Length: 486
Ligand code: UDX
Image (cartoon, rainbow, N blue to C red):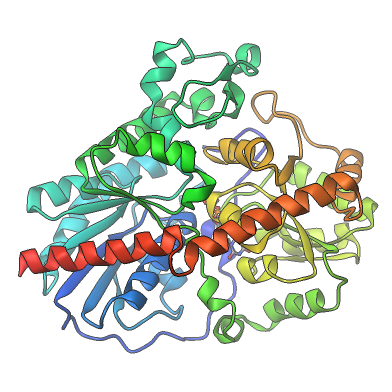
């Protein structure tokens, strides 16, 4: 399901360039401790889970083996990316015929995830040489909890979005009880909800879009989130200090232990040349281009790994960027060639990039983002202020968190309801000029805040930091589970 102003881009259009084979030799399952990981088939879900697996393996003695289960389609996308030998891929069939891409028909895709993953996943478990001590599965793949219950295997559910978004769905009954669902967003969008534990006041229009765009998807999401109570652990990719109030309020009523490990981003690849070697020739061009730009002068633009906006909106953004005179690096998936001439020579348009490396480049001073949770965590880690341009689902409440709670960004447009109207080129040119004016007082305050949150994100990851302490505790939990099994 996409909002009316967003068209879609096939997942496979992104992966036009091939990776050189960097896969490492796979070890056989000699490990005593065996974990099976099952992500929802999408990059925004696979990235954080495989990053968590890499961290767990790096902290465990050599006997931890992780079987990472992806669809055949996703193995073709990530199979050659470098990974530790203790992590091995196994596949299940694609949930849908490959011609139906995930975002072209979100309801069908989600329905397929709900109905077509359980059986092949169980069959895969039957084929494993060694039963797992633990299943780590995406909150939005609830079948794992059913399988774990049947086979008496503990399940750790991992939430790929913010704790706040999780809590909004978890407290759906409160919204119903207070007559804040259902609602007509065009009439009541500005009404505020202040009673969700730990969450600051939020407008109805800033709830996940499925609250007013798709009753079916909303009930799916509420059902999946309520399913978490049947798991044994609840894992978050967020940073405790950035969502402490809502995390603590949730923990007070959650019947299972909760851990936050964020930011679960591939920061460990920043130093090495491996990912550069993985890039094909044209990818490294943008690195060279960034190296030649003044500090903080480049606006980086991306709408995530599988969504896009309508061609008409693309054209307005291109014309607005051209008129602004700013330098920019724009990830436009399948439309890169069409937009290159439209944008003029002040910037670069690419089909894909190593986003975390780009955000951490000194020439990048701002991030026009659709506010996917991973992009948001990466921007916080890089200390880069954001222009929020949410398209659907959790991106809208995440935009509210960025702008109203963390105060490290501006909205590209004030959301009145469904994303019907276009943002015009003049408005875009004016907005990006003001946003990238590093000397303005408003921008300097936002940069200061972004650096503050960057420091918090880095501190969470070092020894004694909240995420590091949680990670070490969770490693102990896994080894304890194995001991009780053996
Ligand atoms: C999806 C949902 O759309 C999002 O709302 C939810 O929060 C997570 O799942 P996605 O749209 O893919 O995520 O966005 P995001 O969460 O930001 O993840 C995109 C990932 O792709 C990021 O890790 C980003 O670094 C990576 N990316 C994106 C690249 O590496 N290069 C690119 O050019 C673009």
